[in-house]
Amino acid sequence: MFNKYKMSKVDHLDNITSYLSRNALRFPDKPAILHPQTISFKELDKEVDRFAAGLENHGITKGSRTILLVSAGPDFFVLCFALLRIGAVPIMIDPGMGTRAMIKALSNSDANAFIGVPKAHLLKYFYPDAFKKVNTWINTGNIRIPGSVKYSSLRTEVDFPGPQCHIEPNDVAGIFFTSGSTGPPKGVIYHAKTMNAQVKLMEDHFKYGPDEIDLCTFPLLGLFVTCLGSSLVIADMDPLKPAELIPKKLINNINEYKCTQMFGSPMILNRLVSFSKNQTIKMNSLKRVISAGAPVPLELIDSFLKLIAPSATLHTPYGATEALPVSDITSTELLDQNEEEAAYSQGICIGYPLPGISIKIINIIDDPIPEWSNQIIAQKNEIGEIVVIGSSVTSEYHNNQYANSMAKIPDHSDNSIWHRMGDLGRQDSKGILWFYGRKNHRVVGSGRILYTIPVEAVFNRHPDVYRSALVGVTLLGKHHQEAVICIQTRTKNKGFYLEKLKRDLLVMASENELTYDIKHILFHPDFPVDPRHNAKIFREKLAKWAERRIR
Image (cartoon, rainbow, N blue to C red; front, side):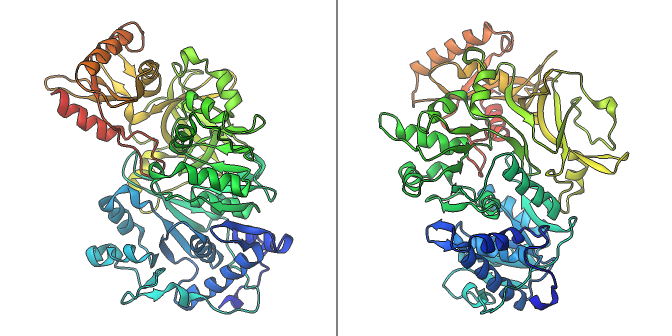
């Protein structure tokens, strides 16, 4: 069926698998994947052809919405590239969000096909209504599952480089679900032009390229890295459970293969730093590290920099599934902007807008905004909601009109779409962006508003506090929220110690203008966090817990 496509594999980069084919021509023997097995770009491109043909033979064609629940590894990259090559639409979802949320999201996806590990196929037996439109089931395991096609049988023998499907810039290229850590999971539509813009940003700004060896801890990012010719070392960890990684394995990955770049959430960086304490561990081959998914504490940045070469750069970009990335700042710039004594009291510096991205701060509005108007723009240095527009910003959600109405603002002057990040921030006189926390996490008290980042910074300065979380609860008989600070200590303590720590923290709060009226402090053994990066505090769950404790 490939013969119906008349274009060259490398002539039309709207289909991002053209990058892979171009790499196969430029450096055929260079490893696309180094670990857990070595696969050259030529071999990977040929495997993608073989599986793309096999997918078409089993009814998956251009536009087929295909759920992909496959373990991180070479098979993931082969299948994802194969789907993109034929113009099918991979649907990626994070199982860590929980079964109920995942089923609801999958039901909303209107998928036509399902590719997954054997365990994932159990879903169709327990929740058949979620897969009514699925007519092709593919099993990536070795066991037989009735009604499914074995992954190995997809592989065809093709003697020619099958040209990929012609993709228009506005064609849907993928649907990637948010993690559900800041609200119900939403399917973000990635058009071909958006996906390409993100690849270009990684090439132009972060300087990913063919001379790099990348430690891959986040498979979707690894897909883009492969497009740019970097060799992948797939990290020896479960990307769905970063908190359970074994640091020594990642350090061995980096040093054995001389990785030059890596992406790691703050949780991953923290695990590496904690393991390396009191040891002479270095990862000197790294020259570029990117950490995102949640704010990266200054203390963690400083500690991690000691593990890598002095010339290496640590980036902490800001973005979301809907807009990735939006801004960026390096560790050197960040440490200069935030003096340790007053760290984050004026928000977290998240840098300048990236090329092709425009950022505005608008007034805090909880309702939909039907159309763009300059009248909603906040004053310079005023705290408001961050909104963005640009080539790498997505324009809509899949089958979710409510989410579209709440997060998208149409600009009728040029038919463009602004995306509301749902985050609060400000832009200073230099145009630098500062982050204050999620809009839904602000606490609207009696006469003033408290923002999570600066308030928590006050409590995080105590040496015994590992992290803190501001939440708001509504007590009986009151019409405003009551601020509560939840504390997770660095070590497990009980009784008298916690009572003394509570008194100390209340004194600290009373002496600071940001926190002088906070009276409620609760201790939580281990904060709930987002499933994707295990770094973003799940404040909605904490708020419910806190409300039960203080009523």
